[in-house]
Amino acid sequence: MQRTPSAALALGVALLVLLPARGSSVLPLSLVELCERATTIQRVRVLSAEAEQGERLERPALVTRLRFEVLDVLAGEERAELVVFGGRLGEEAAGLSGQPVLVEGQELLLFLHNQETQSPYLGLWQGVYRLRPKGTYREGRALLDVTRAGELAFVRDNEPALEVEVFLDEVRRLLAELEARGEAEAGS
Image (cartoon, rainbow, N blue to C red; front, side, top):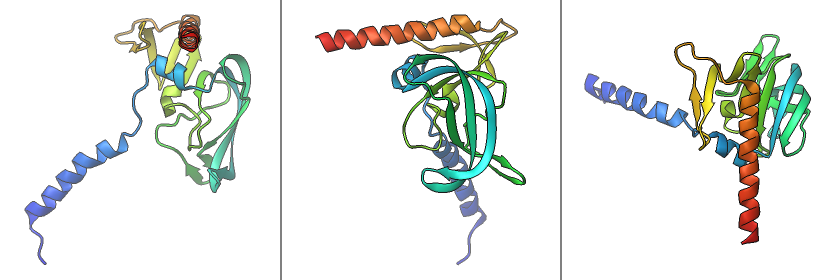
């Protein structure tokens, strides 16, 4: 069977169209959705991030054991240690696309879940906020504001980043609203 160049071109175009759609399996989450779905929300400082041969989802894997100083628990139960898929051990490296790599010394706000998946972060990168003296960041992008609906606005053109305490107060406000809504629904 002889393949024509046009058939090969059509196959190539089809793959280019289909692959990006298939790879984008993480749906965007608002801050409200993160607050609703997280089983634990905590402010932490990374004490250590050590790669090791271990197990993830009952399979042998390269993992990173993260140890935290828990600075504040906004919701759920404190988790001072996490084991996540991936890391670098000698010449061997593995990672999960979209999962942030945490390093010693970082201060973070983590939105965690208890589901048996490769990553404990809710929505992968969406569940990890870096708290720096000059502002709050997600995936390297500085936050400017959080709308009343919990949507995030990111900094453009050298605008100042959202201050850490303002961001944390907004998360606390959303959690209080969700709790009040839950109590009202339970009472009716």
